[in-house]
Length: 368
Image (cartoon, rainbow, N blue to C red; front, side):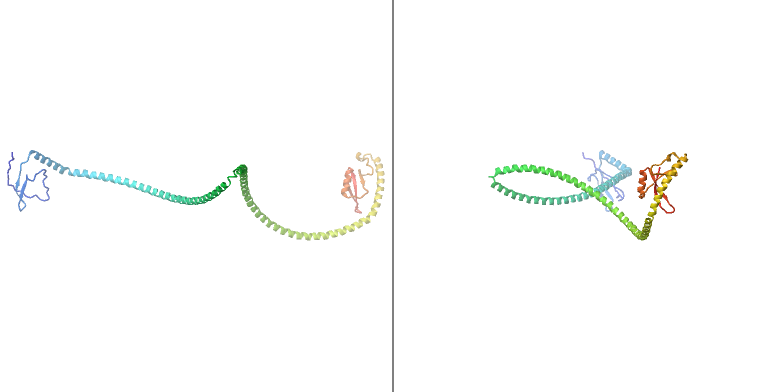
């Protein structure tokens, strides 16, 4: 059945623009319509009856609107808190990320520095390898040239072998001989190696000797300096000795003059001695006579004086007893040394008697 429609003539004023319109949901345009006057007032409105479900929906919507209006501030505060928490977390994450970025920058800087060092070292190694490669290329070229030469030499040898196939037997014998010579040469090489090792040892020894000679040279240089100093001192001493020599030469000249004078005196004394030889012979004869007389008188006195010492009761032959001692007067003239030896051979000692009148020295032997 069709629903009944009632019409009512109502007049509504237009709401102010600052007030919100009521919230309606699920309203069809055909259900409600109004006519607007030129003054802006609603003249007619078509009102339709709503079902209970729609009425319930409108009530629920109204409840939601009231709740929204009452709790909108709390919701906004919660949203602000959530936004603050999210911003703080984002700021912390940004700070943590910035620290990590700084660490990564430092790490990247270190890596770049290490990369530069590695690049420089690699460049050096590449340059050295390039130089070695160039050197090896040169060596390879030289070896290729040597190979070409050897190939030419081998070709010539092959031609020679083709020519000398008939003389293989002789060459075999020669090969045997060459093998023997090779063994000998190997032995010689081993000996030469030994000699080389010995020479190396000698070289080391010579190096050590050179070092020692260097040290000795240093010491000799020091000694030479000291000798130079001593030479300077000796020069000064030589100058002083030259001065002393000049003074001594003067003294020697004076001594020579005095010696010439003494020689003249000695010649004159010798002449006087020769003149006194005659009276000395007379004195010797007198002494011999006196010895005999003294011997006779001493023997008589020994009989008269029995208290003389038993040691000198008698003297040997040709000896004279005087004052309890035996004396031997030599007749020949000898030097003092010869007289001393002669007296020692007789078991006596040499005694000299001075005559104050004639200053004559008579050599006698005193018996112990």
